[in-house]
Image (cartoon, rainbow, N blue to C red):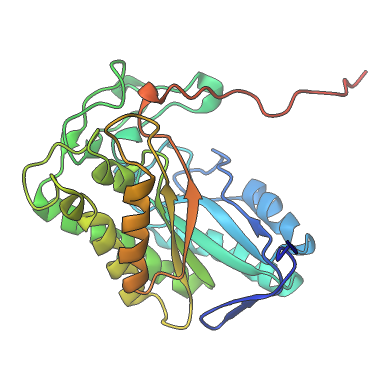
Length: 288
């Protein structure tokens, strides 16, 4: 079968010269959510790469939704201006497009940075309270999040929409909504983390209500000629959790609402998945 990797692709009014996409790569290098020269160089280098689309790392829509204090965010004018600087450079010096991935970490917020060993960040370490669909902790060593009230769920949807407006204003060609890796939208989808008894919990129709409402809120404010997609974890790798069939069902619901693509990954919600991670690259060269 012939490869379509270098074939052009059109999403709404966006013409991509090929199907090479630079996926989000979290750098843990922002200051109060504001990106600086590190991100400018990291993302700017891809202007000359030939990739058709460059996506930011997870970009958080609210202060209490940040995975760590050093994560890129998009809820202030300063944050918007800083990301806009990167967008302008990519548009001026490459033939690819620029996308922003919007996220809320939910119960995975207030985490330590990788070089600190990961895990939950205590209040005396600069941590902040977390929220989720239910008061179910990520792991025994993590604090239980506070379950969101219905009115607060609507406020989070508004935060996604406000960030989407900022993304449009700073020049983003594409928005990707992060609904994977155990972050807030994924937490609502999975029966492992969602124990609600209201219209946002229970059967799959209720559990996917919040992600679908977030998509609608973003789609309503982002220019109609620009595409919006969503990243999904296809499975939790835990019996009784979110699975491939659920992902197919959600993808069809998203398509009916005008979703332009789904970006498929997996895992990230439960430490019971049995999946192990480690360093992908070992040093092959030692400087002397």
